Length: 304
Image (cartoon, rainbow, N blue to C red; front, side, top):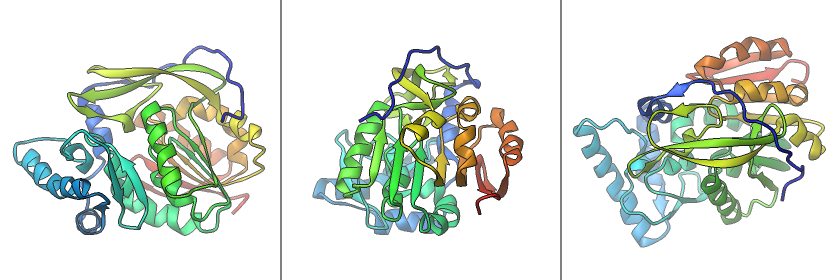
């Protein structure tokens, strides 16, 4: 169900050109710490026998990959087999995930354990309205639905979106409104590029801005500004806004100025080419509370 009609418009300019090595680096962020390994090895489990066995084999395959000089650090890329898995995460949420992708890692939120524990958890508990822009398969969406009155999940990649919908259903998240579209400056359509290496699909690095030197799959997606989307949904305020749109945040910013004025907490990934956004966000009355890598956490001083 789409609340706004999307009109034709031309695509946005790219933020930069990525080699496939850079794509891998985007997904790696950092090696999981011991506590994160514990969450994966001990507390995350497959709900079907075959899924449980495949998860047990994954760390062995991962370690072998690293010994041989491999550079792909996300655990999910090393799950054997081709069939989808159903898992229960360390915090008791159920997820459908794909092998050879980062689904496992973003279902468990291991790569963003710091942001999740220090930014998201303390503030989502007091939030009624949560907007997840770049929802992927629902790592934050599913957890947010347990606390927020309404969750808006926006995800442009078709396969991500279909799995997001299934994960919403598996976790009985009746308060989630999911939209398949990209967020940009205004209404239109855009070419979404999804990089891959051999059997590995980097769906978490898909972008309407970046261009990739290596192999990629592309989709035509609807685009709208966040201001239009929020207006269509008649949201007078947003308690927590998460944005992770792989380089498109610079262009999308121009279409979310009104939304930011009514946003209390903002968690946003800012690519290097868009670091000018930090100053612009602060000019709107936000205070930076914390940062980790490319991820930034702000509070709106006029609302806090």
